[in-house]
Length: 125
Length: 271
Image 1 (cartoon, rainbow over the protein chains, first blue to last red):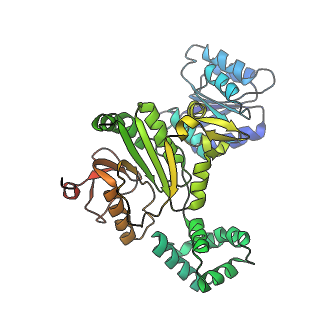
Image 2 (cartoon, rainbow over the protein chains, first blue to last red; image 1 turned 180 degrees about the horizontal axis):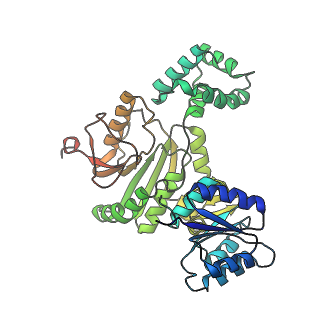
Image 3 (cartoon, chains in turn yellow, blue; image 1 turned 45 degrees about the horizontal axis):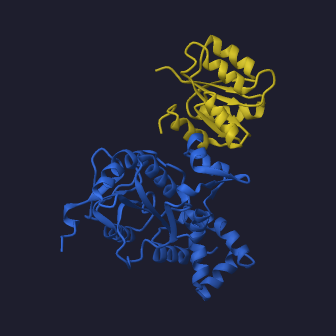
């Protein structure tokens, strides 16, 4: 059985590091991208199983990236979790409508990420 | 805290609440009692305990007991019980009840996440559920009644979709919406107390509550649950909890981890 992969897309190196530690603990092989454009280039060559996507990033924001990733061949397959400090319900609904499987409000911890990933079926409960 | 203090704490917790306090929890107990001592105006934990042993004031004893209980809970914990409730039990029970009402008890509900999750399952099944949440800890019940949860709490176990469906922002926290809140009532109650009324439930959730209890107390709690459950009702224990000779009142349902029904011997005969 091949190892599941996760791409963490966030312009904060610290957030990427924290998220990487959590997701690696859940058994994923992790790669990182610092903005949407970098993430899109990554996904064009190989789609990960799971994506954690920040909203506000330079070059290309998370929402633009998510829409373009979903339009790639097979782009409907990865489980995409939006991770943002944005907590307004209408903004959360916007991210879900754009194709996010779930939405994580920052700050989050390992328990939250694990429960979110199991709710979207990316890991066993 | 002296070893003698700890012995007395063990006795207090066992007799009033039924719980075993293992000796390796002494540091945890000390850590949790610190804030109580400060809140109640004592110089330190030793002073608090000395006063408690000299004049056992009920409210202080309960504050001490409460802080030693394990309050951990989250929304849709273990998920499967809520799916079984929504997809299997509620459709059958709603049909079997003349008035269509299904009464459910979250026994040992802590801060209420289980009770709310039950109400969510009821709404999803289109069933008319009435949920009662009870806990020994007054502070936990007060939080449950406030129906306000932090960003951490509301995200643990719920999808963003479910969060938006059942909660509204309340400053930087989240409040359970009225349409769910009206399905649930909370009250303080001790599972060791004998039932004093004839309220019965169709489904009882008592998950991760009895494991740390003394065996005799566990049997007493199970006896109380049996008396509160209708004959064709269901009991959910924690997915890792097993009944081992404490009671003959319940038997496990095959293939449904943690789900129990009444054993034939405990069915009440029709009058």
